[in-house]
Length: 108
Length: 152
Image (cartoon, rainbow over all chains, first blue to last red):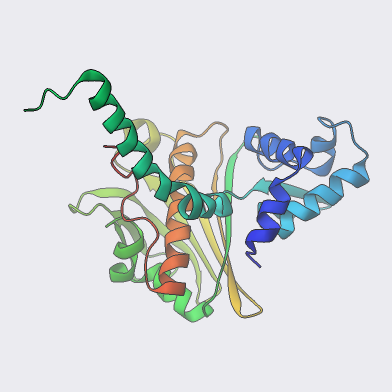
């Protein structure tokens, strides 16, 4: 299911991140399309795609004999909400404080 | 490829019937769609529209298929930006499939032209909306209050 361990494991590999970049550049590619951009065996690419699909980062649709791969951004949005968004406010406040300190506080 | 497609998949711990209601009930929708809601009687051939919080029409179209609680297809066109309206109708398909103790929600949004501005625009919104539906149904709270939180 939407296991964060599966998600982070899927992201923790440069070839799999490259596959996500390739799908971001052009969604709906076949295995053959993706293999053209990678110096890897077809079998290795299939295995990486399976890991990405298990983590729900890639969704597939069958069209006749072909399987089309789509980048699914929903789990990345969840990472953003869970791990990034809540840190933004303190960081922006810290920057604001730093700016005030360096520029001198002319508010009063 | 001569079309622009986006797919959004999420697994939500709920039932297909509850998820269908959340996808079609205006009051629930306002909670996860940043104050916007859709209006339709959700029958094939019926008119459909997406309405801004202030009542202006954002997008409009028609229900193509409605198989409660499995499959909903909407013919969907932007109505408030001329350059996107000119692209014509897109097709949005929502599929709900039971999967263990959850429902797999797949939203596919297709425009039959390459480099669609409309698909670019909706692709920023859908992940946030889908993620909000998931939070709302699983925890009773939404994840994001605003589509574009203020940066100040």
